Image (cartoon, rainbow, N blue to C red):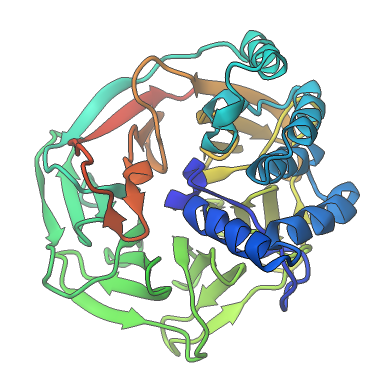
Length: 419
């Protein structure tokens, strides 16, 4: 989802979930800081910092916690503290690159910050193997989700701004699958074709109203159903996969839940996992549909769908599973679009046989010369297709910021290593 690009940062306050709460946009955060300071009360950000510091030893990835704390402190103008935290984060050599963080942008030019950036860039050099595979010519889509349909041999591209779904053939011909305005859709995010039925499922979410719907289309783009939980609270449906019985497993980045949707009863049931998720986003499932991987701000949680047991996936030394938007399973690996670790990158994580730890990290794309704000992708054979520049950083909530120059959508391709 678009908040993963550095336009907002994680805020943790007291609620039903004592540690984690959805991220707030940068503008919202600045407003909160200003309002709180005028009232002379302890700010939401200060409370979040205190709580995160207390929980830091228990976080699955210390580097991720340090990075978030650094951005929070810098938002309050605590530059020396932010630099101290960032220095400790960088010393772990996990791949966080503060040069690409809008929240830390004011630190550019400071000797200490520039030295940290130089250290990161030396240890994690430029990797550039992407080439352009497809172009969706329509300007202003602001795409979020990308999926490949093996039955149709075509890609689906979801649009935040146009609130529709585009189908693109492998030859590059684009046409509307679910046209703008036909069904009055909310901004469309994650999208997945069902390999068993030939239908298509998609998640939608308006950040302006915090309304969400789970959408179901037939193979021609006719809307079969739209579903919402019966409870009255706000939701932020983000990404999804198809489970073994045709059920839908989806992330809710607003309630911090992972839901299982039953297509027969139309009931949403929250999964219980080993720790409270923090803005869960990318989600992947193994081909046998027995193991589920869910990404959030601090890493990836593995859920055994047969037993219900779950655990954090251990990234290992000098690696991080934090800040993942798009997440995909491929031959014992997780392929990830990491766009919330500073400068975005695409990485592949080789897993142990039990799927619980990373045994090798391979960076597939890192700090390329072209504009690079990736969100999600799709795997076809050995090729990883992904949205090169979502342009989601040009949106404020559901709306495109004024004076913004919009562009066509470019989809890149990376060749995955042989296994």
